[in-house]
Amino acid sequence: MIIAMKRGTVKEKIQQFAAYLEQRGVKIHFSEGASQTVLGLVGDTTGVDEEALRAHHLVEKVIRVQEPYKRVNRLFHPEDTRIDTIGPDGEIRHIGAGYLGIIAGPCSVESREQIVTVAAEVKQAGAGFLRGGAFKPRTSPYSFQGLGNEGLTLLLEAKKETGLPIVSELMDIHHLDAFNEVDIIQIGARNMQNFTLLKELSLCRKPILLKRGLASTIKELLMAAEYLAAGGNGRIILCERGIRTFENYTRNTLDLAAIPALKKESHLPVIVDPSHATGLSWMVPTLAKAAVAAGADGIMVEVHNNPETALCDGEQSLTPKEFGDLMEILQKYAAIEMRSIGTDKL
Image (cartoon, rainbow, N blue to C red):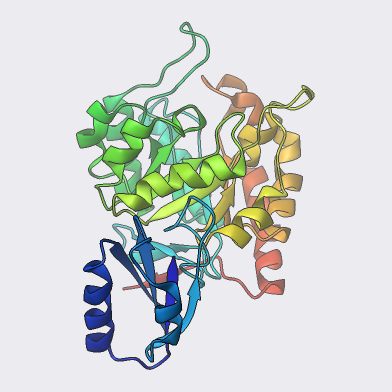
């Protein structure tokens, strides 16, 4: 159940009203907008008289939520959520609520020279975040599995050199301490429904980039996000990265319809990964543009300084020059849509 308080209601009155509701056995989750506060009632609401709530002088509207996801539901939080991170250069980068977040970098960290070079080039082209895999989930046990902790160390060197916040995938909760200086923790498609991992990450306050599972529905993705939000971590970025269908021309089938669907259902920012969706570098610019045009809050693109020699997913990686060309186009798209690809100084 969701209760929209009347605009202008003072905070003290809202707190008193919330305490009254909690006496009836429900937990209250607050969402404070610019001019209105919304209360989300979580738990057994049978002890709450809905008609009495509607008649209460402080209440503007009462909405009974049918969907099982409550905290990530747009009904509860009508305004778009924006995820902010502060880089070591003192700049604040944004994703969502009018800001396009551009995440770029290699699929896997291979060497210091590789990651630092790519980081500098994607930053120069306009990327706001550096991605790089230190721990890599691979279908084959004989494929390159990443450099592990050494890869994280190299990512942090690139972060220090360029000032870019870093995004990297966490596969095992036992590695969480090593991610202390990672700015955004990525949960990959294979771990989207690793509920033990999600529960643990719900207790931290780092932004979580949650990728849609290989064959997961939109509802399942939102329920996975609910696990994070239910534990108190609402700093969630949803990522559409393609789903498995009968079509095998591309690596996956990019579901562009998921963008407006997710943005209708949820207030969380939605980004798109066209690299993993297609597996073909020549398709990436076209689908990146399509994603932004469809309303995505950002894109995550694989960029490698020498894709032919990449240890992981070279076929789907753009060169820094190709990424630069794409960024020039996306800057124009953002200007047309009155959105920003940029940063703010502290």
